[in-house]
Structure formats: structure tokens, C-alpha cells
Image (cartoon, rainbow, N blue to C red; front, side, top):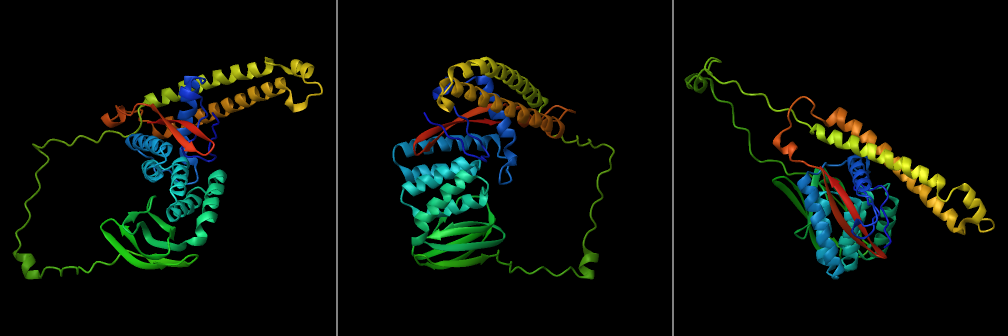
Length: 366
């Protein structure tokens, strides 16, 4: 099985064999936990999805994969969009674009591709894929550049455009008449658009102003006739309100991070020693004379060296994140709240369906 990770991913892909049969569970847990805690360093600011949202995203993604395998691309796209809405990630967004493209829904695919370029500009693989989709469909579509102040959600012909509220969005519409609506909480504003193939237009939205007038202040006579407020109860005889419990992660998360860092460090040392001795420089020189980089012993040694580099990077990343969690996010002074105590670390497997192969993912959550 060929497995290709996305570069710059918020939720990274981990290359695994079927049923995790050829990977160390300890190594998998360490890499996944470290990658998840470093997720906030992506192209867009992470919105810190809750454990329930991460679980829901994984379930929606799995349903999308099954629908795609059954060639039900419309349902697959809706599932992938729902997964991206629960816990945004380049993998879910790319899967949604691919499904809309395969479903021959060019306007929706182009709109998602434009969103991908805005949300993950430094993810070269995703950007290249998105530009290809735009080149394929945009000539026959009408582009509408939307600006919202403040940020708004968009609906086109009673269909919600995926993604969070944004101040700038590019929509692609099939030729014909459409209704574009912007929404802010309990307010909305709609505009009619006549789309043409290859056309381009712009719309600016702002929440409508309230027509309610501020009531006039009460007159002096009314104020004097109003009953005086009752005095507040004295402190005597009343129960003191207990202080709110301190917020923060349980120290157990820091201990887990320390354990994972130690495990990764040990794995890195073992891998480095293994790379030095198997096959070893002398054996490579002996067996690879005249063969160049095609020599099996050379390839074996290079693979072991790359494995060691990955382990070292994972060890350093996990150590840094563990220190940040301990210093900034851990509640060391009191017992965690019941909701925090229930947030036990867990791995959520997932599978992305792509052309030329599939990608099996392992996503950590807290």
C-alpha cells in the first residue's frame, strides 16, 4: 500500500501498514501525540476542537471514505465537509474537493479549492491540487469575490458554503440566477447574482442596522415616585460562594508526554545504533563497488538513516510540546474539573481515499 502524507498538515498523516501490523504501538502513540500538540503551528490558527468534535470528525471522515468507495461521491463530499467543519484539516478539505470533482459538481469543487488556497497557502501539495481543480472548472463558472464586515457565513441557493465565518471568500457559480446570503448570528443579508460563464463580480455584505429606537430616559417625577430598591442582604447569615475551580489540564498529560519523550529517545538511540551496524559502512563499501545508489545494501542503510532522523525529530518535538503543556496548560495547584478528568488520551484511526492509493491515519486526541 502506498501512503503519502500531506505537507503542512494540521492533523498529520502517519504512514502505516494494514491494521498497524508493522509499526510499534509506542512509536505510533508518541508520533501522533506530538503531532497533535504541535497542530497549532499550521497555516491557519487552530480553533482547538473539543474531543467530541475530533471524534465526530473522524466518524464523518470514515463514512465519507465508505461512500467514496461505493462511488457515492455526493454523499462522500458532504461527509468530508462535515469532518472539516468539526475539526478543520487539509486532509478532510482535500478529500471534499476530490469528491465534489468526481461528482461533477464543478462550482462546489472550485469554491472549496479557492478556500484551500486561502486557508493553507504554504501547503504546496494541497495548493497544487487546488489550482488544478480551478484550472479545470473555473473557465465555465462565474466567480464572485465576497467581503464581509464583520466575518460572516455564506449560503448559496439555501446551501451552506463549508468553512468558518470569514471576511473574504471566493465563490464559483454555475451560469444562471442565484441567491447569495450572508449571516451573522440572528441577522442576514441576501443579494441576487446573475452568473455567466467566465464572468466575475464582487459583493460586500454588512449586518443590517436595527430599527429599534432607544427608549427615552425616565422623567424626574417618575424617578422620584419609583420605589427604592431593597437593601442587599448583609454578609452575616449568608453562605460564601466557593471560588471557581482552577482550569487547566491534569498533570497526567505532562507525565504521559514525559513517558512518550523517553520512549522516543530510546527508540532513536536504538535506531541510530542499528543504522551504524546494519549493514554498516564496511559492508556497503564491500558489496556496492561499481553499483552506485542502486545497491541493495546502500538503500537499506539509507532507509535506516532516514528512520533515525524521523525518530530524532519526533523526540525533540514531543519534548518541546511536553514542556509547553507543563508550563502553560497544566493545573498543578488543584484537582481538575470533572470534564478535564474525563479527557483521557485516545487514538482515532482514519482512512483517506485518494487516487492511486489510500492513506490510513492515526489521530490523537485529548
